[in-house]
Image (tube, rainbow, N blue to C red):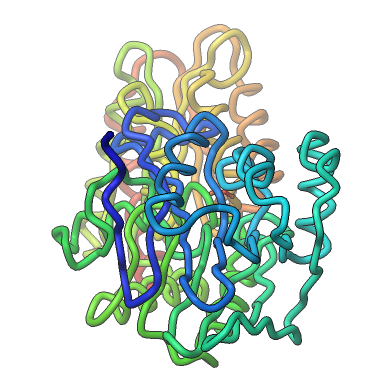
Length: 405
Ligand code: FEO
């Protein structure tokens, strides 16, 4: 009978996760390259499982664990996060290892008990840990680093000093299904792109807490980072990873303007193009995003490192176009516009000003700084409006050069 091949990443540390080759939407995020739910077994005197996987993959996960160790021999299950992509299989797994103690923080324990009554019914043993806790598993001792909001309040890193390994769960991940397990086994630019997309869409909303996580990680000697999604990081790939995280955590945005718009008959689109030429004339970078052809995932990726932005929408039934409203709402949740300078523009027909007013109100909720000059014109754009659009682009470009790094 076929058994999964053991995947030993570093001596005595095995990957026992699963690839989700087909997932294309992950709570609203377009995961064009799938994802993985990574879990690990540390084979020491007290075998320890780190994290589990999403529920539909429980059986494959169990078989992978069995390729390394019988579940009845596992003494600890460390849960770094309670979100169901990592915990969905927990009750099925724990039912096969009732001798084990579940090691986690109080917030995570509370969530797991709420999410899985079937786990609670198994009356598991719990060990609640915090940043002062140490767990000896034989030759190794594990410690724990709370990293709230990377990605939920319950998240923590688990650190193994003996192997200089950080089990980072959502931190440093990418949504990528792959047979490889390390970033250096793939073209690095591909992994870095997916990592940035993941940050923009998953972790991007709280740079202050991201900074805290980096400070905590910087106190540790780290040779290996084993993530819960995508590939892990080792050797020369760690420096560019931390540099990118640090850039975002410190809100060091690029000298870049992202212009997002929808258009009915091309009038608002022409203004967007003129604006982009104004930005370009300053030497700042510019991204032009026609929302009809661009997913929210890509919008977040463009905005993530942009210093400034513009939103354009014609009036539709006295308000903005739904794609524009949706993009602003998505950016609001991820705090991708907060503190950034932007302009709004667009054509109107019979509806007039309410479009711009609605956009202004929506952007206020994003804590964005919206330029008082609002470019609005009736029906067809003309040379005068195009010239103003270009000028607004110049202003945005100058601002991006001033505040971008
Ligand atoms: Fe990958 Fe927040 O779970």
